[in-house]
Image (cartoon, rainbow, N blue to C red; front, side, top):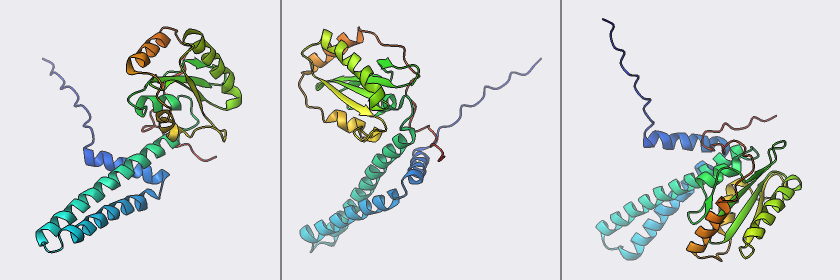
Length: 235
């Protein structure tokens, strides 16, 4: 009687510390200054803790110890926050210029109050230039991915479509590409967040549902994953 083969064990996911180490190594390859930035953040937290200890607990050893411990914890937190921001910038820096990069930002970093798809709403199949759309309390944001000279027509076509069905909704246009006036990929989420609120939450939801019914052009592949993308080799 043939023996039953044991099911293959699932690959064990790396632990939290190992994941952090991998993120740190990836970030350091792209941004060597991250080590110094994290160190300054840590020392800054410790310095604040020591300063507060001398101000409020100068005559209490126990109080000084507590303030110093709090400063160390604050320093660790500051270093982790710095690593997180630098890691995101490094990850998006590796996929900048690739088709679907804006979709990756929409998938992972779009502000919570905004709705956006990682799939474009308009695309040029020949050049892979695309237009992405996000909807929030600031109205509609259209993001052209590619050189402005090529994506402007795509963006204008999409803007006219929106103005035709939602004439009173503000439309903000951003471009992500090689031009000087374009927004850097890692700053895209921040640029969307800066758009001034003009709609209520119910109005924003109604706008999102209305636009979803319009359909899209033939999409390009989904946005690349910035944390799995390989850095582009220098030519």
